[in-house]
Length: 152
Image (tube, rainbow, N blue to C red; front, side, top):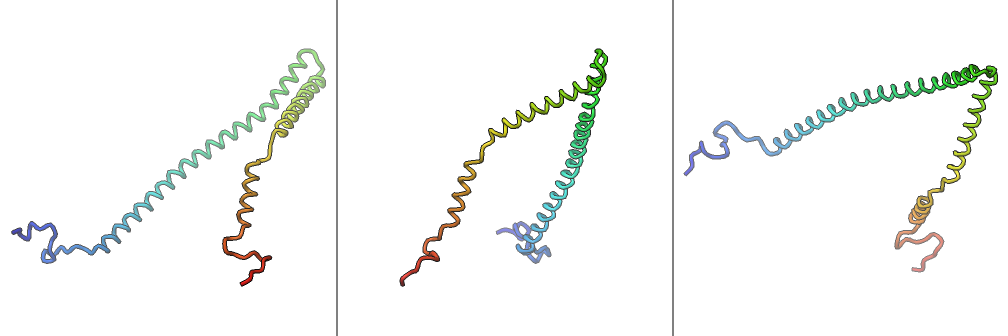
């Protein structure tokens, strides 16, 4: 026979009673809940740090774009002054640069109009929306339509 010291489960006589299953389950669920909350907090901290760095990086790109946009003005001033250096009067040089802008804007308008003419209505989406409307307007089997009298 086996001795009490070698039994797999301690007896209440040892002074080490096993807690009930419900208590063990409650403790385990508390630990899991704490672990999940800690993981969520860690994820928030990491995402906040990454989002802050990403926002700063995007801001830097935006500032660079604005500076580049402002620099284009000086490019065209330099182009006009270059025309002056070739012997044209200053007013004519700036008028030529302005005419270049007008022609470029006109070309962009033409290209934009061509692209807009190629835009088509979303035919499949419109068709499925009509089908969905028809589906929702159908009566369920066994229901009466309001205009039909029923003889019982």
